[in-house]
Amino acid sequence: MGKWADGTGTLATESGREVPLEVAASYRARRRGLLGRDGMAGALLIVRTNSVHTFGMRFPIDVAYLDGSLTVRSVVTMRPGRLGMIRPRGRHVLEAEAGAMEGWGLRPGVRVRVETDSGLTAGPNRAG
Image (cartoon, rainbow, N blue to C red; front, side, top):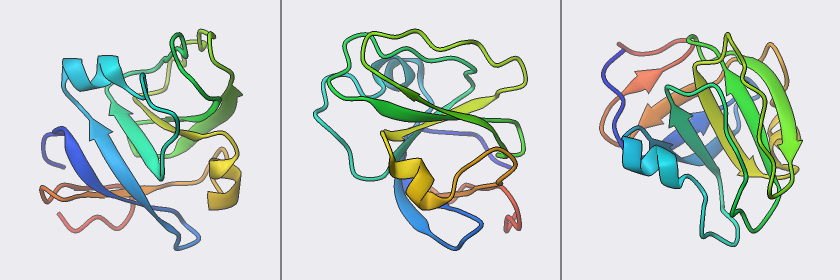
């Protein structure tokens, strides 16, 4: 796997569903996250973190904690103004509007695949 960078791409689930994705890899992008937005189409992958908060958020979100192999460890829904628990085995966090992840089939044990527009592919059956 290459080095994570800010950008866009696609999140693919085991069910074959493809979701538009934003990747937040830099300190600045990770810190901003979904703050200041009224909603989002798709998902935001925050790399190299195992906890999030929703202070300053305008809408509830689903949060999937992923391990290093992009396997979902847990999924929770967080209302604005909350502090998420630290997930010791978590390596990345996936965020989306509340209710979206259930529709995508994301639950503990499911592995996801990430393909970024910069050419990085990570997850099961990655191309390099």
